[in-house]
Every structure is written in C-alpha cells, then in structure tokens.
Image (cartoon, rainbow, N blue to C red; front, side):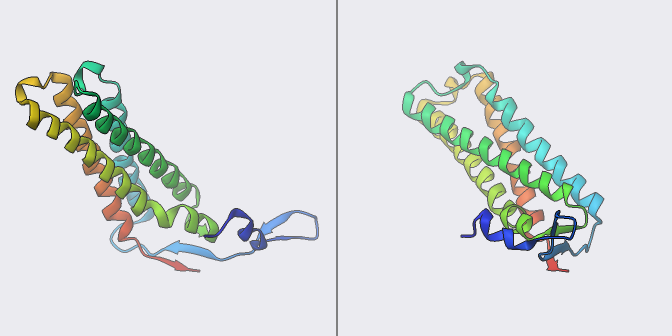
Length: 177
C-alpha cells in the first residue's frame, strides 16, 4: 500500500523555490456523456444517498427494533453505511475539483476506490434493511411503526442510490495522459 510520502517524488522544486507537480495525470474517456452530465448524475445520486441516510438517522428512537441485539445490528449497519456514504461524497468532491485531468495520487487514493466505497455504503444499507426486516419477521408486522416503515424506505433509497453510483463509476474508463 502506498503512503502519502511515496507520492512526494512527483513534486519538483522549480527555480523560484516553489513545488510543482511533475507526476502522471489521468483523464476520463467520455463515451456516452460529457463531464458535466456525468458529475451531475453522480452528485444527484450522492445527495439522494446521503440525504436518505441522514433522514433515516433523524427518526425517533421508537422506530427502531425494541431488542438490544436487533437495534445494535440495525444501528451499526446504518452508521457504517452513513460513514461509507460520506467517504463517497469526499471522493466525488476530489473528482469534481480535478477538472479534466486528475493527478495520479488523487486517482489512486480516491477515484479508483469510489466503486468499492459506494458498494460498502450499499452493502451496509442493505444489511440495515435486512436487520429491520428480520426483526419484523420474528416479531410480526404489527410491531412496525410509521417511523420504522419510513426507515426501511429511506434505507432502500440510500441502497439504490449507492448501487447507482457504483454502477456508473465502475464503468468509467480512465487513461494516462
């Protein structure tokens, strides 16, 4: 695994004493949509994913399962999904700030990992939904509150958006410039 220090050799000092980037650059090969359309779609999905996850976290505690084990399973998976979503948000920010060319260390530390990170967000959201569904399966649908149903819907929305980000970013083709 490369560390931050391993990329320092990509910066060279010029005659004025300032450092400039001399390493490799990556660019995205646009096929079906241009950069603006691609970023707009990714950001829309990311906002939907994080908005649904944050909204699910704002629900009253009474909407969670009543037992400690099921509540812990649902909450841990929810928190892991939210943290993974924030990581995707950060990576998309780095993609958006990079213009048409991306520095190698940005590509390797962030952009190349977006499909994995969005897959993690989707997986954890799916496990939170599964935990809530198992609780309801064991205790019956009569135990679901409106908040519990809303939690399920919001987590399913976050799951779908994360899968959309994963699908789009895993199909992106990058090349060295």
